[in-house]
Length: 333
Ligand code: ACO
Image (cartoon, rainbow, N blue to C red; front, side, top):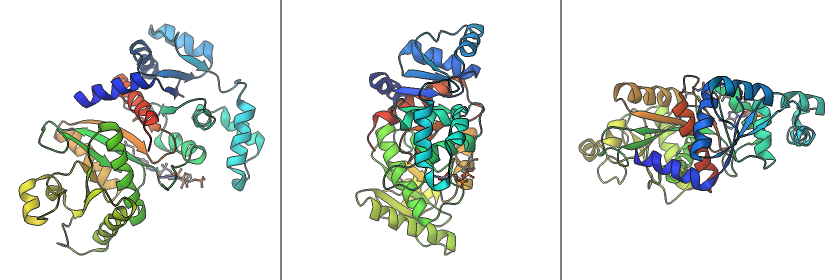
């Protein structure tokens, strides 16, 4: 896949420092071996160094070029704990509580990023989405002007006539169960930025619904119509259309019938789903039935790139997601 090769080439040029909190996880260590060998990123692996090295030896992987950091003994713990107490002062976090949280690599990693000691994080091979995201939400927070984090998937479809040379970007498929119209507008705008930065495409955003341009009226349709208007206000140059059914978004002949004259309908390359249910179900249907390659979720809207793996991920998934995280770290949003 040409785009994936470009993502990896960009990562190699950027040489970002990516922290991997799951330092004893075998797929992560095998992926680290490949990433270091190919020079895709610099890696910081969290864990007890003796245990990490022992596991690496058992797996026959070479981690000599990785920096191994032990969250339990690292000299930066006090500094990080101070930062945590300051960030969570409204929540009454104490120094003692902060130091205890830092024993957990899923807290230590975002603090490394916050302190400028790492550029991005990838975790989730053995931890649930919420456990990876909560510390990131709390300490790294969102980009200025963005209030919610969401998750996009790059879908590689076996048809170059669909989307951008066969690539569609779907969101939100991973984070926000029931976005309101403001949040949905933000998801549209941030997904366009992700698609531009990672895939290099010129966004054409379809705001999906079960209705096209007033064919049905329902409170759920109103949400999408209002979100489309708000996204236009947030980014007046964005090519965006809504509400659209997915066939009107993707198929020229249907678009001509249902949304004539639209510069997005029939040729959308970004699909924004109205809820997490539809987004998550939608990407998995396309992945399984259309045999599309799904890469993600690429988390967007966070002040620094932190990505979450599926627990069923492969070594290749981890390598690709480290490359994507490095691309996000190199991009200016
Ligand atoms: N963006 C930014 N900040 C957020 C977001 C968001 N989308 N969601 C929650 N937060 C913040 C909150 O403001 C809160 O901050 P605070 O502590 O400073 O007040 C903090 O994160 C915790 O918020 P909670 O409401 O307690 O959130 P919780 O931790 O319960 O849930 C979570 C967050 C886990 C991400 C939840 O939204 C969730 O479970 N989403 C679905 C995840 C999922 O299962 N996805 C499908 C699987 S992934 C896949 O298939 C690829």
